[in-house]
Length: 121
Figure 1 (tube, rainbow, N blue to C red):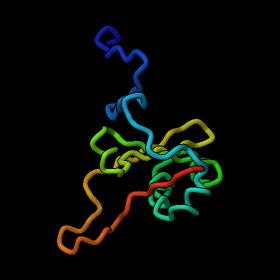
Figure 2: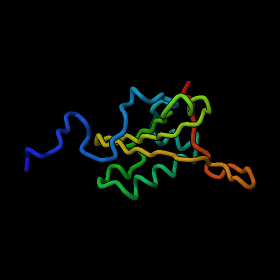
Figure 3: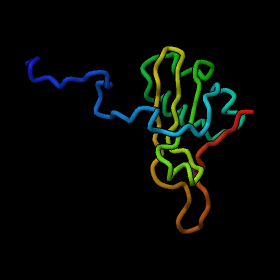
C-alpha cells in the first residue's frame, strides 16, 4: 500500500545510501580515467568492477569516465589513504567503490593492493 511506503524525500532509493559528499573530504580531484590510468595503473581495478556490473555500454568505455578519490573521515585523511573512489560516466551514472581494510600483508608487510592517489598541478 502506498500509505505504508517509505517517504524517500531526496535520498536515493537504495539501501546502500551513503552520506553526502559534503561529509567526505576530497583526496584527489576528478580527472579523466584515461589520465588516471597513466598516472596510477592500479586504478584499473575500479574500472574492471564497473565493466563487470554496469548496465550501460557507455560505462564500459574508458573515454567516457572520470574518476575522483575521497576520504570518508578525518582519520583516513590523516593516514593519507583515500577509501572512496567515484567513477562518473558521461551518461550521468556515478559508480562508487569503497575500500575496506588495509592493503598491507600482515605477515610480510608487503603492500599488495595499493590504493591509487594522484595530484593535479
